[in-house]
Amino acid sequence: MSSESTPVLTAFSVFEPQTNETLSENDTEENLLTLSKFYDVNFTELKREYIGVKTLLKGSYRNITYQAFCKMMTRRHQHEFPVIQKLCHMSLCIPITSVACERGFSLQNIIKTKLRTLITPENLEMLMKLSNGPCLEEFPYQMAINYWHKKKKTFGP
Image (cartoon, rainbow, N blue to C red; front, side, top):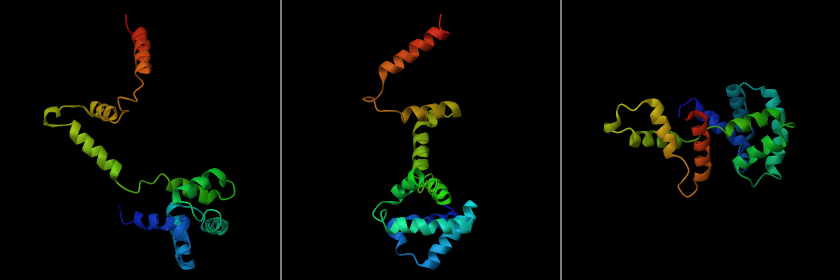
């Protein structure tokens, strides 16, 4: 994780129901300023909206998780707090860890061995997608067979 992104991730703590109560006014303002600069949103508008959101964080949303809070903001409060809703929506898309990326590289190394050095990137991608597919018990065999028959009729003899 780059040193530039760490303060931004930390700044999202202003929307964390449990952490929010422990933040000082100064820390809250710094976090809002960080988010405002990084995501290029109007600081005055963000600060104005935050006053209403803080009431929610201390009230009915005080016992929910950060993710649940952000989902509530994007579903129920998008018209009341459009700037904060936008920030919450973006924060839900931020990968916090590199686990998924590391899994991808590990899978790539399993598939592309010394015996498969000439495999094309397209074929490697296809094999990686296949290996991450549904388990055998859940695979919709009949749907796949029907699809294959339909394609065969379209392109076949």
